[in-house]
Length: 308
Ligand code: NAI
Figure: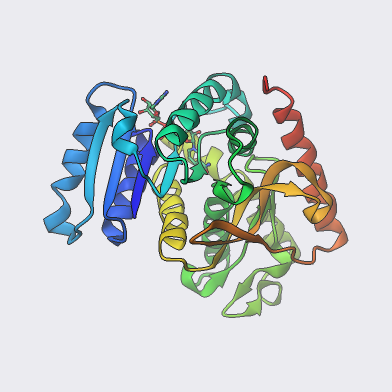
């Protein structure tokens, strides 16, 4: 399994590190436009191999796409991150040009690859890749919900005062402060609905804290987060590489699912060797349906800013 990560910045490097530590990839290529950065990070990471006990080979490249040839999975993290006070949507102008160019270069060298889009505004960038590359829809997947769900589970475990691994839950909808739909109704602690333990007010607070999870970190760090984003991407790549048939909320191109059409937005998806193998149409109640429709309208407004 060969994985390429474009953008050797904070998220790209974190993603490479987690993939290497899990040791399921034979080769990881880190590519960046900044001279020497990808080579430097690849070398630094390779020097952790004997310490962390992995055999994956990590290769750095300054914009030489021939090194990415034959990748099974490519991850796009190139682009600018937000600063405190910015929305993800404000990044569209610069990032759309970068994502378009990078995805076209990647596909030239790896026509059969599966693409995971991370750059923000992620749902719109995923839609852009669908519109400009013509790859089949199962091979273009946006990463947002896997991260938002991990943040939701963390916030739930805090409220429940229990280990995060006892908690299960999912965030669907757009990957934005207003678009996320944390499914509090379906969240569980050791299979028991969390509603049994938490008041409605507390659950609403957890949902709100989840939605601004990225903004909270951006304020603390002065830039956006990287550990949890890198871990979320690596879990998705592993599900594909190891054909795990695991469910993550992913930004998928919808053609009628959940009553939505012609946009990419976070929905429960099964990831396996063929990429996004199935969208799982879970039953939403009236309030959840209204929220995902509203979220979709927000994503469509951002999509309308694309020059397609
Ligand atoms: P960063 O600034 O640390 O890294 C971005 C890297 O992309 C830089 O090293 C830069 O040189 C490189 N780059 C820019 N243009 C390029 C091009 N044309 N070709 C190759 N490389 C290029 O930023 P960070 O924090 O890693 O974030 C990357 C992106 O991921 C941002 O758009 C951010 O908003 C997004 N993000 C998305 C998340 C999600 O859940 N979908 C979570 C966290 C970040």
